[in-house]
Image 1 (cartoon, rainbow, N blue to C red):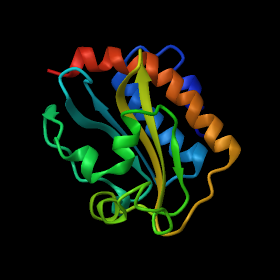
Image 2 (cartoon, rainbow, N blue to C red):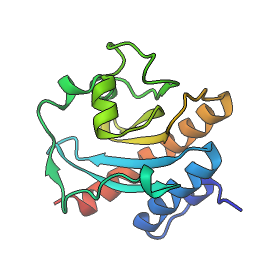
Image 3 (cartoon, one colour):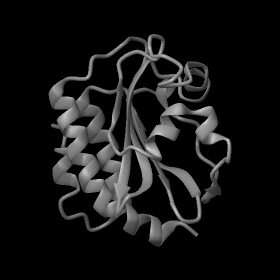
Length: 173
């Protein structure tokens, strides 16, 4: 039986373990193929993919480089969803990257770097600053994100908005 994603974040003792378990729980709850957590320090612009879980090896992201790295200055230009996340805390629910317009996402960038077909791009905010992105995704087919999916993601975003700044301050060096 899958753990409740919100419950995992209610009183975590170890944030690394909580975030790791959250990725798997969200995949189960949302029937997603992969869930990943990209975190960043909004002041230093150091970032990294900190946590990810995939149902199958072919859905896994390549291992991230060790340590926190400077965010690419071209990222907002290359990735319209990232540019939107920098100014808007609302999650983007993309049902089919092949059908979304270039004002929403760069389909070639998504195919090349992530390989998914549908995704939720959920910014994590605290005090008006974007600390990261939670990204459940689906491969192979389009996906309609239900009202309950959206409600779950929004609840997890809120909880992560409290926990992620602490994680970033303790781990981003």
